[in-house]
Amino acid sequence: MADPKFLDQPPRFLFFTGKGGVGKTSLACATAITLADGGRRVLLVSTDPASNVGQVFGMTIGNQITAINAVPGLAALEIDPQAAAQIYRDRIVNPVRGVLPDTVVKGIEEQLSGACTTEIAAFDEFTALLIDSALTADYDHIIFDTAPTGHTIRLLQLPGAWSNFLEEGKGDASCLGPLAGLEKQRAQYKAAVNALADPQRTRLVLVARAQQTTLREVARTHEELTVIGLTNQYLVINGLLPSSDAKQDELAAAIFQREQKTLAAMPDILKSLPRDHIALKPFNLVGLTALRQLLLDELPAAGDSNTTHQAMPFPGLSGLIDDIAKDGCGLIMLMGKGGVGKTTLAAAIAINLAHRGWPVHLTTSDPAAHLSETLSGTMENLQVDRIDPQVETERYRQRILQTKGAHLDAQGKALLEEDLRSPCTEEIAVFQAFSRIIREAGKKFVVMDTAPTGHTLLLLDATGAYHREIAKQMDSHAIAHYTTPMMQLQNPKQTKMLLVTLAETTPVLEAASLQGDLRRAGIEPWAWIINNSIAATTVRSPLLCQRAINELKDIEAVSTLHANRYAVIPLFKEEPVGIEKLLTLSGSHQSATKH
Image 1 (cartoon, one colour):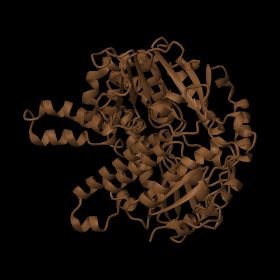
Image 2 (cartoon, helix red, strand yellow):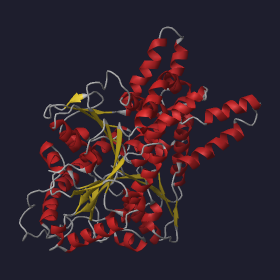
Image 3 (spheres, helix red, strand yellow):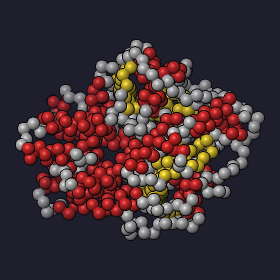
Image 4 (tube, one colour):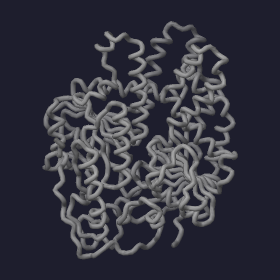
């Protein structure tokens, strides 16, 4: 086979980034296998808190470098933010245990318990892989399968942000714990910045689908990464429907034409990048056999060209919306892996509720979500906004300066301002905005499109930590009359968690894992939504027929093993963009509820 352009003379570091669900993990794994099969020593690293690299290889990997025995020369590592945070805490606290009074040690541990420490620890582990050290000396290539775009940009900006913060001597009490470890790593961050900006050492592979929103996202990513010096970029358009499948099937023809039209209208700044097109495959990309076929130019035919798959009568979205509407208000949170369609489904649910006359606030905590583009219009009863980390951080800073800073002298105010410039401040500000929105759901419907799984779990983790802190400070009588955000999330009358997935093995496994995490936090998911199902449509294309057959076992697993109630949304000929199309997305079936 002809090697893809992005694999032409690959440098040591390869980053795969892009919007959730575009195939970053599959491409990163396939690339790692290809290089290892060619005799290179390769380390595959996932920086996504919701990593599924282990699921793709069918083995447990985790937070230790683990050999992939079936592929000589290949090892993998999943940076687990929680495990990294514990190692980071131990590194700071253990040397002072038994040296400082227990109360002081306990205070340091409390300072290190927040989500800010979790982010710093994962970042600390990430930068350690970008420098010359004993940890990475054995590898010719290190391939990073990154978290969805918005969070990856933040990760790649952090070496510079923390370096500047430390260079200027910023920070006092509120960041003291996390920063105690960072100060020692200053040289490491400087080396990481240099490695990222060196085109001889680092290449970024921007992964996209032939969809308008995805390509606009990639164009923004291209610009933001160029600004911080990461200029060696390649573009991969993944999952393109082959022209041969468009000849005898209305849905396949519509998808093919839509994809080609989208590629023709690609943002100009992307057209100059070296580009590869990867064809949609008839099989799920799990296991070595499938991954080795991903980068092949030609594949055997998907099946009999005279076969027709008839649409299956699955339950639709309208029944779920009927049940949601009965309560008259509440928080509806859509959670799941990136790229499964949370933004579209959040917009569809909000529009359907507003259309029935209910006041609805539609919002998102996803840095890469584009609600306004999905809606493409306005309507009565519907308020739309997003939790913008920069806006919320500035609002939080001003509030602290006006309250805590009001009675400080000039020197004290200057120290407070320095402290508020810490990257930790953003985490506090976003949590407070999230809490504000949760409270609002007591009077109206609030529909929230969340960031991809791992980052939403970190936000919920901060919510749980806040609840525990409040509970510690109050006596039992007072806490009985106080409702924390976590208590509202745990109350099914106030909050309905909808898990969004696709009818594919990896997304379903990930959603099941997310459900387990939520249950451990005392939150019971209310329903599952399977989006973009081919099995719910009638198709004649051999490739689409095969994919429809593949979906049936995953849909059965959701309906029988995982979900209390579920709905299936078919794959449509046109992208569901705009209020009219979103209104029709709900279909006419009733929801399936287990009794």
